Length: 246
Image (cartoon, rainbow, N blue to C red):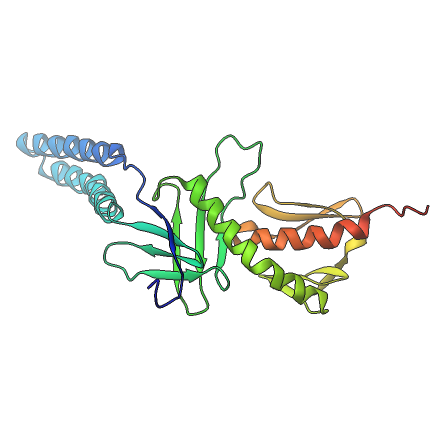
């Protein structure tokens, strides 16, 4: 896949995060306890109650089985970063490959400096239909690979996005569009000089327009959020800066 996508030199491999079997063991204990109660009920002549308890015991037993299967699958997963892109592999699935210059990444939560614990949950997509979702519970060193992926995509695609804006075109990020004079959302244009702040701390992108907060779209719905944010601030700050001649 790396050769096919021309991803260049291999840089780093991230293996599965340590798996905790606490959930599996807990479900197993609950299922075993319920099964024992069912047997006792049947032994004392309450067959209906025994069957009912046995059916209930199937719920945690099934959850334990599914989780155990996922854990076994995740143990052989791997995330590889290259000069020009990345690959994601899981047992029983085709390798998904993405190039930094064409990939879109959506992040569920954007970490900030005052966040005690940053969560990394990424959804990758490519122009060829490739897709992969993964988070910090699946691959170790999430802070490292999360920042590396976002930084590589932003650094590679930002110059092209800036050029698109400079020639007067609209740069689209999901339902939000950016152009030289305004931010556009649902056919409504908000001139940059009226946008006082752009905020995404609540998981929802909001803009403060003339003192009023307006909600736009969830962070997770905006492809390449860091490019969007960088472009928006580059357009907003000069428009809202005080006039030095006054």
